[in-house]
Every structure is written in C-alpha cells, then in structure tokens.
Length: 125
Length: 290
Image 1: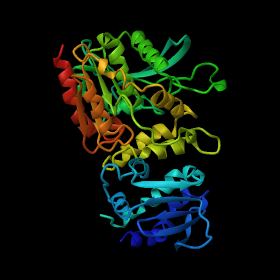
Image 2: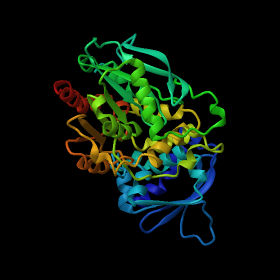
Image 3: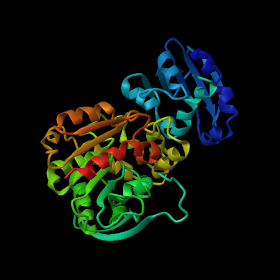
Image 4: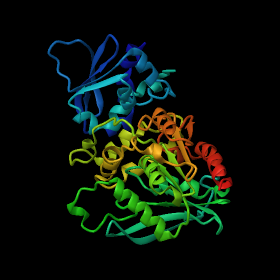
C-alpha cells in the first residue's frame, strides 16, 4: 500500500503547477525509505524526473527520509494523529529519520514537505 | 466572535516611545476599543519570530471586551516595532532579563494596573518567570503553549544564513505546529507572520527560548494564590507538547492545565473560533476571582 502511494508521486507532483513552481530552483536526488523498501526520487527543477526503486549499486543520493510503513500511513491521513502530522514531529518522536546533506531540503523545505505529504491527496484515509 | 464582519475594526493601534534596557525603543501596540474603563487589562505576548497581529481576533471579541481590555504589542525587532538604533552591527539575541524588562517597561508605560499577562510559546515561557518573580503585580497569567522547559527539535543555524531564505524556512519549519484541522485561511495568515519577519529575528528569540529559559529548577516557587496560573496547550503542538505543559503544571501547586483538542502551537491565530471556547472559561474564572 505504501509503495503504491510512492509510485504515484511523479504523477501527482508533475501535474501540480504551483508545486513545481515552488521547486523550480531544486535539482537533486533523495531517498524515500519505508520499512522494507527505498526509492530514489530525482527532481529536476521541481518536477520528478525519475522514480527508481532501490537498492541500486553506486547510485548516489543527497539525503534520505525514512519512516516505517505504519508511520507513513499515519502521516498520509487527511487528519493525521498528533505526532504524525509533520515530518519533524515524527523525527522528534523517533518515528522518522532524516540523514545526509540537508541543504537541498532545508532551502526548499515547503516544497519537500508538501511533496512527501502528497499521498494525503490520493485518498490516504 | 464575529470574524471579518467589521468594515472598520474596533482596534486602535499606536506607537509608544519607551526606554528598554537603556535603549530608546519605538513600540507598536494595539488594543480593543470595545472595552470600558473598568475592564481588566490583558497584555498579550506574541510567539517567537512573529508579531502582535496573532491576537487580532481576541481584540474584536465583544464578549471578551465586556470584562477585559485586550492589548497586544510588537516586541522590538518585530512587526511594526523598530529594532534598536545600531541594529545593523549586532546579532539580535533575546534573553530572559531583556524580555522581562521589555514587558515591564511596556506595562508601566501604558499604565496598566494589575493586568493579566497572556503569552504564547516564548511568551508563555516568560509568564512563568513573571509569575514567579513578580506575581503580586499581576491579576493572573495565562501561558499558551507554555512549559518551563522543552526539548529542541532542529538546529537554529538554518534560520539566518544568506543562502537560505529566512522567511521561507521559518514558516516551513513551524507550519507543522499548526493543527491539520485549522482553517486554511488562518493557517496561512499565521504563517505570514513568519514569512514576513526580519532576518535573524526568529533565531534571536529562540536564544531566549532555548538557551536562557530553563525554569525547571524554579517554576515550583510560583505562588498561585498570589498569581493564578493557567496553562493551555494544543494537542498538535510538538514543540511545547501537552506532556511538557502537564509536567510543568504538576510541578506548580494550583496551576490549572487545559489540553486543547484540534489545536496546535498558535491557537489564537490558527483557529480563533475554536480557541475562544477554551479561553472564555479561563477569563470568566479570572473575572470572578479576586
């Protein structure tokens, strides 16, 4: 279920003109990790250029965001429970981790937070 | 509450020139024009990195104005208050003593006698120390999203650097502190306070909040008979969590703690209608107590 949400991210990002505009200065690749899987999400000027399931040998990523399947599913509810409603709340509670070079994320924070919360619009409830 | 119905809102804004910590400061404040002469003054302290407009809904509330005179001011560096002369060659760093002096100077300058002080977030932290040191001067204090200590959740160095947009990162960071149920209009109004703040102001406020206000070793000294203490925290606040507030309340005999459902770190601005339902009983309690 989690994987299905993630696989639909390119479609949802790339048809959201305002989200692309907010990410227009961002070109990077980050890893989105779940309980068992990981996905390389390559962004080029705000659009998802490529979504590739890992692991992929020697494929670089700049930073990673990891949470369990259960945590992601709570995060993606229309009205998430307290503590799962924001990625930094999840990190503070130990329900998620963010590692790597955080500059691309922090300098485009609204874009990244909105991108990873997009499954809320896919009927995550 | 009648949100947005006034063509000319019953709020009056003025500027006050006052000495704070030996420096001349030009302070903007606004107050409700609905209150009578006998109304109890309530001085409102905004959150770190924002301004007094967070309280605008309370200033136009007729039911509140029946007994209370709501007053909110912008701290120096914030909103329409200027930073001190020479700000360009210094890094703003708020301390407990500077914050106390600012609030004390403002209250003295407007001549508010025995006011209630209501602060949110860093303002909520300050009212705890205000009640401890100067409790006899206040009718009561109300801490919104308040505790005597809380655990940090990010590196403040991100907040003020030339290669990251300060307004964008400050607002994006704190956006998650707003409850998901809060109306979009008020969510984005709340975030505008952060999007439009001056460079380094939020970071400077957090110097007080993180580095200079661990009051765990002294909050229990508050005499709530002398100065009643009310603590109200939103369930979605993961900065000052409900557990932080409950722990603080448990250490202060007589403190009254309320956890507010479907609210976050900015109750008065993110969902004013829902918040007043929690605030009105507190104000009624204060109005009827001596």
